[in-house]
Image 1 (cartoon, rainbow, N blue to C red):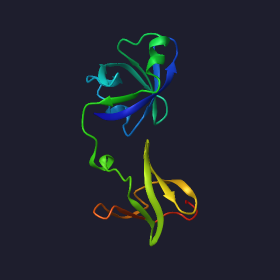
Image 2: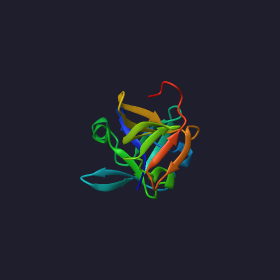
Image 3: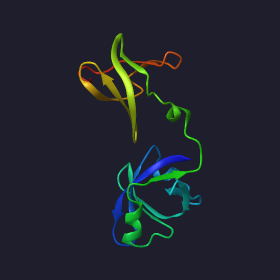
Image 4: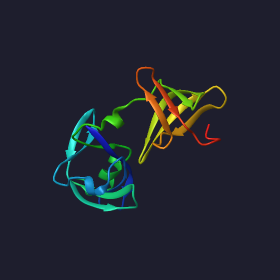
Length: 159
């Protein structure tokens, strides 16, 4: 299962929900295929009845069997999934990797924040505690999975 969105809040009284999209464009969502929302540890299929873009990373959606505010409120905070495998790039877990800014050790990755459009790393540093560093392709100099080392060229003052 691939997480594509999170229900941010209900919208209106007719069962609409506001989604925060994760790594997917509205046009990429196949309305003929179900999306899944987890209830009690099990994925429950829903079909999207309508979808309207709200900026680049949000959408107002109506799904099957959710036709009132009460039902929509039950979905708030839940992730939306589709069938499929995540891209290899998104599968990479950098937790435990050592991050370098060129030749200087920055710290160790403690967590990942999959912010739509920009993966960020939480890095525990000796000097500043935990900092969030965007993992932008322009910053990456080298990634060594065997050594679990990530060498970046970071803008001054980022950590």
